[in-house]
Amino acid sequence: MKKNISIIQPDIHITFKKYNNKEVFSPCHMHIYDAMNVSTADKASLKSLRIMPSSNCIWIIAYNTPDKSKFICAGSQIKEAVIDISGYKNYFIAVFDSNTFYYNKGAAREIAPADMIGSIIDFKPDENCPEFTFIKNILNSTNFDSKCTAFAEYIKGSKTLYRFNPDVLKMSSIIAQSDSECSLTQLSEETGYSCRHINRLFNKDYGFGPKAYIKFCRFQKVLNEIIADSNRQNSQFIQNIGYSDQAYFQHEFKAFMGETPKQFIKRLNQ
Image (tube, rainbow, N blue to C red):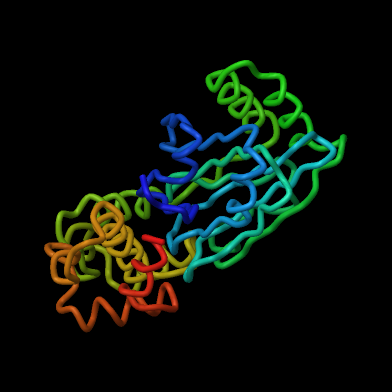
């Protein structure tokens, strides 16, 4: 695959492909990427990761040893984010389902995905924190499955799962599974809730309304189309996805990415 940019885009699995990573689906539909012993030559080009706009929470563990490691947590991103990962040779990445969010056990209050919009938090684990132990365990793991087991134990032992409102889960599922663009009016008709109440529910959990969630899903779909085959016209990317016309598509793409689709494709194909 001729794609030299390393990106994390939840609906497309091309990050670290050249390292022959495996992928596993957990009960909460997380995607796991694993790359070990990245060569010096590859490290020169693998200085950063680009996170595409989405409602997903992403964890990145970059490490050489437990003492030389970095844990990065990225919340929902309204715009493309670039994360520095230079100086490491091993990477373990979990991209969670958009309805899955963990916070630390014993936190003073329950943290919601809404608290993490546009945020990227990183820290260096010390020997007293669970992340330090997790890195030791994956360094001692002999295969990918044992790393996933260590990851599951790390989550079980140190994290608490955020409880989304069941109505929000139902509505986000309706949006994600819709073949064409779903509207706020349709959600109101299907649930019997007012548009105002639906907005209130989404904002409490996600920090943004259903219209923004619809835009995220639509944008993920169009990125899927672009990365699957970038040698097409804009009109072919947006077929049956919900964009009213090419001008609207280009406007929304630039709002998310800070560049036009043409500029993004040029970078993608370098």
